Length: 114
Length: 113
Image 1 (spheres, rainbow over the protein chains, first blue to last red):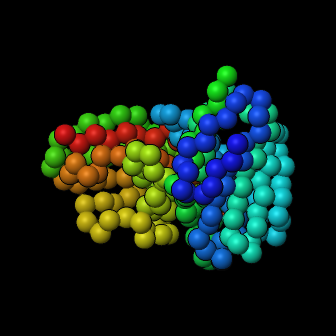
Image 2 (tube, chains in turn green, cyan):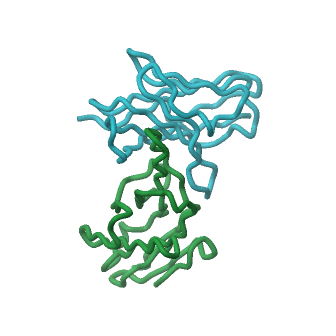
Image 3 (cartoon, one colour):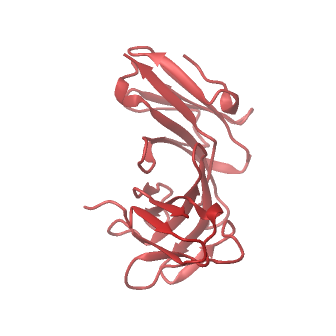
């Protein structure tokens, strides 16, 4: 299953399928991007990050792709499991001097059907 | 190594009262960030502090809100004369100096009645 940026905030997939969550970021000067997972009632949990000098990074079952030309970021989750159900946020880190605040996207809710 | 601690986890205040939210960063972290989250929305940056210094408060409302991170003790986010619109989840994150990875606490859910 695949979501399209902020216009489809809910993504429903079958257990075992691959999930793709998309994000459009806003600032060309952002040099660092992070995906967070947030389960209901909890704080955001770091999943994977990527710096602007890379276009792909892989973790355990997750891959982040960065397309700086169109300011687009995606998170791919392989073999999605029920425990992956959560809201996923992309965040961009605007390096303005020593200030490393995060600017967050709206989020995509991922529902995994058993 | 304990993670980022926030307390209280839930806070109920009547309109006009003061709310104090506390955040203890991870051991070894000297940078603290506060974010606010409304239901079904992303986090909105409020303020970034280092020990005894406010680095960026561009996300803080001009009135009623203040934050500090003293030399000793937790970081405090203070909201004076709360209004219903202040009801939200407030998250604190910490990082090591110079590192971008931020670790988040469990949040404080403020309800103003």
